[in-house]
Length: 89
Image (cartoon, rainbow, N blue to C red):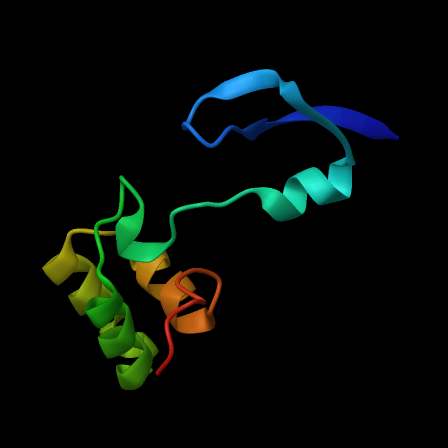
């Protein structure tokens, strides 16, 4: 099934003459999301995520969580690669 999507015009606005028909998969592939520290609600930075990944000590999760004011689950998710997957160690 195809749906309609608007593309940006050269002057930065959106116009109906730029309407194109794309599939849901194409629409999904064109979406962009702010990842990591670029996300508006991020409490960690790429450097902190790297530090967590390099430590790789689950026993330290509660210390990192307290230091960076996040939950232990947040630290665990970084360590397990559920979040901050874009960071290279």
